Image (cartoon, rainbow, N blue to C red):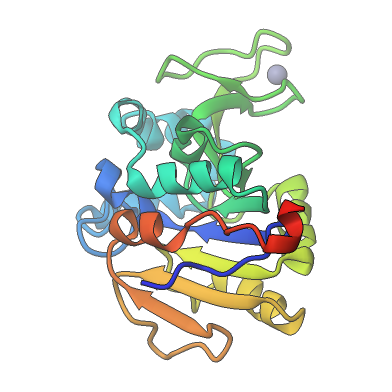
Length: 245
Ligand SMILES: [Zn+2]
């Protein structure tokens, strides 16, 4: 497999979705074997507007997933990305739709989390900074007394402003846009790849399933498992002779 070609001072932007964490035994919410595919009632509750005002119900739905996510460990795809960021010398940014925190645990720095992180909690009312939470049950905020809640983006909630801005700033500057474990044709992948393409970046998607319909903005589609493909795709660039002088 031909590795992604980047200049040593090039910029890579990676977008990851649920497919990258399947080999870490993190179940996706949708699709084959998905938490909600197997339990439509849970999906109905997860998408109910009532949830936005009921931190206790958020815990009921998402609290039981925390121990499973703590047990999960980064797989070779997460590790290949973290290694490439450290060793390539390139500017490597990563935007994820996942809430499992596995990129961070693999050693990737400054992950942009579009949908938050299930292993963190924040206050449902005040500006208490989100924190790594070892517990899985509702408790009052130590500052204001309102209920804490998992720090994830629910249906009907906006992507955190800082994460959205960071993603679009990265997309404008990238030389290569790589989507992994996401269909590529729905938001946010569809919007990010179109922007990257329009700004002149090369574009690649790695996913198990082919895009249907194919996106005109992805120049290269690699079908297969992220944990097998990424270690081959992400070889640190060889220095040009001029860079060695
Ligand atoms: Zn509070």
